Length: 201
Image (cartoon, rainbow, N blue to C red):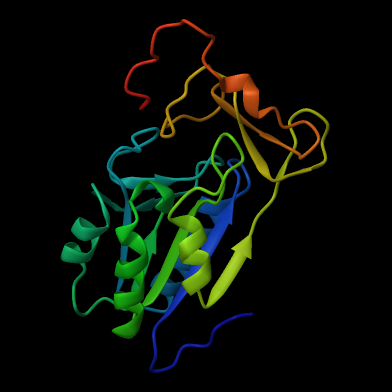
């Protein structure tokens, strides 16, 4: 479904595994809003420093300027009342408050676009993305290509040992896997090993 601009706000969620084009789709939609001369604000988690601190960068190197925030409350505080379109990348890192923040902004008449991982490295729902899917007006589920067999991939495979839920990384640390090739136990810490640190790269 494509929501038509009117007098009400709405929430669009783009979800899927890593390397599935989520950020690319988010950037595409935000650029269209900018071309239409709508007032746009874009946010990303401050912990995501993989490519740039002040830009959302896709794995294919598409870029768009953004503001880094620690959590959903900081995001909401930074929104200008004149802003019409709000973009958020890596929504899974902004905490449970993102659901209420997105809902309030949409109720104010703003278009809210959020991209993020819907499952974690163990294949479990990655909160708050499931809750965002429940309140969204439009949902796009992206699939990657399995880096083992070439089939459609819905999982993010962690390749390094760590039990930390949040471990920001890209190629070399993660790859896309299909249901058959996904190995959730691959990232488990060996018994008796030392902790892997803070879990943020």
